Image 1 (cartoon, rainbow, N blue to C red):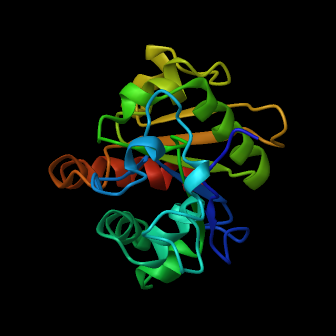
Image 2: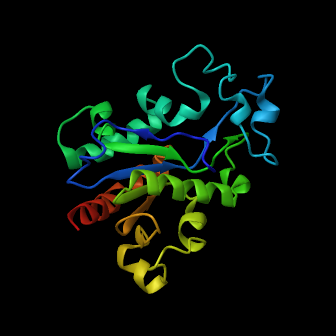
Length: 220
């Protein structure tokens, strides 16, 4: 098992949206609590292992969730970034609140330890990709929606399971959409990639184009 972060799975995930199961993948879990006595070891970019602090993280100690449940925490507590994304998805599911919308999807982080900075790309390893595959096999999504540029190279250029990464094919969807076939998953998976919802200028500046391609993959 390469995975540390346990995915959030909405109670209506299997029903999905337009009959499609959607897994959303964030780049990383970032911690800025530099005064925490565990910060240096928990976010060590050489060890890349926060599991020792699953039950000990001060932000989670005494709570019902663990550090490894961070994907569920950021969804259930209504953080700005997941709310931005849910408001985008609402147009495809009708007038619902953000929590109801998230209950139709699943969410996880790509990087599998707590990041000491926002420079996610500098800390990625093959372990993260293998954890990504574990989650795909477990949740069997039809669509993976990936946030941000930090993980783009890992999930497209370096991903041996992508079968349409040639520029001539990617240009057809302005580089927003590609597909992969993963052993252990019973169908081809569509990847939709966008700017990160935490970057409002890029995110809102490209919503019209993103809406077009999201509708396209839901209709496939």
